[in-house]
Amino acid sequence: MTATSPTSTRSSVWIANLLVALAISLIVNFSYLLLLIVEQRSDSETEEKRTLVMPQEGRLSITPDGYGYIIYPSLNGSTVDSVYVPAPRIHRLRLQDGDRLIVDLVAPRCDKAHYVIGKIKQRNGFPFDYSSLFNRPSKTRDTIYQLLYYFLLAFVLLSILSFGRVNTSRRFAMRCVWSAAAAVALYMLAPTSDWHTGDIVLNFRSRHHFDFVLILKCSFTLVVAMLYGWIYRLGTQRQAMAVENERLKNENLITRYNMLVSQVNPHFFFNSLNSLAMLVRERHDDKALTYIDQLSYTFRYILQNGQNTLVTLGDELRFAEAYAYLFKIRYADKLFFDIEVDVRCHSWLLPALTLQPLIDNAVKHNTITTQRPLHISIRTEADFLVISNPIVPKLEAEPGTGIGLENLRNRWELITGQKIEIHNDGVTFTVRLPLQKPSSR
Image (cartoon, rainbow, N blue to C red; front, top):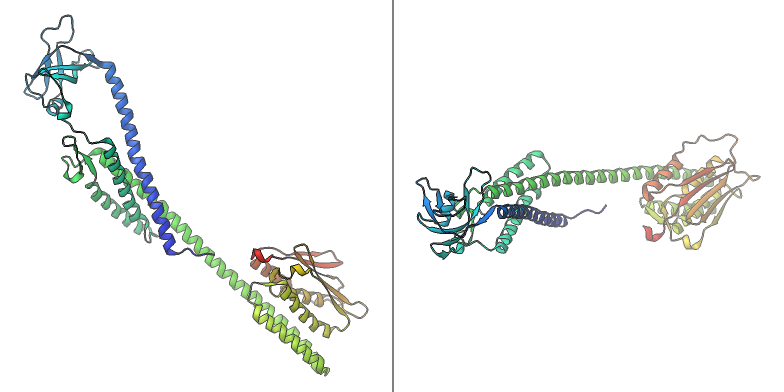
């Protein structure tokens, strides 16, 4: 399992936060702009249907309460004798009592209401200049500032909620408190438009600090950041659990493998000592020396490769030949090994000490006599190593524990992830082992 470095993890979190912050900024701004465009279009279409052109000039009369009426003293055949002017409109347009105005009228929504002032065409005989009263900021500049601000706000909140260890609910709650405090602080630094000066100013320097739309957009950004932080926390916990489970699984596999190998070594060791003791008792000095050499080779092979996962088939065959020699000494002219392995397969891979338990089982469970010698076949078929022997049960069968074959099955599956095939048709016992090509290691 490849471990992920802390640097790459931090980089991935930074990239994810940047992308999510960009998405939040686009959603917050463009959803609001789209709604604003739709509302403006709807209002303009409604206003066009209700707007009347009034070419005559009327005089503005402002009441003590602040609102006013445009009075038309002589309108032949017209039902309009006065036009209502709201107090906020008088204040914003800086109108004075007695101003002579030519305006468009907006028809009332019900029959009993007054007409309302629309767009002013002339004031006191001169065209009315709205630009002298309002210097609206550039829409492009305002949009860029809004995008950058909400991108920065979202990124700061996401960084607070995602960096570091947030593996408990208490820590996540504290991060939410910090992010809320950061949102309040950044709210005062939000860019707002001053319609009178045309400047983009920070919110704490504006005339109205509590902007409902601004509060709504900042709150939306904070909520989305918290939801993302919660999802990130759940994903981090799941990833940590997966890593821990994988670590425990690997440790379990290593432990099981070491236990299986430790069961192989004593089994082979005791068999070897019995055979050597037989040669010593019969005083076959030369054979005993050769036997010791072959035994030394087999032990050296076990020490060098017993804990390895995979070895080449060529190395395993050389070990099998040395191991087979030990049995040939014990069963002179009664045990034969027929080895037919394709040379191209010598570099292919299999778990170490694979052939030894199969040879042991064949010798242990079958009759070996001069009249009925035992032939053990080791050959390759396609991508498989096939070991087979005829089934010649002993008259007094030795009780089998099945440990050797079960160990082989477990070791093969643990190391290669593949399963061996075991066939017993009552005549021949065959084991098919799937080999691995060197490139697949």
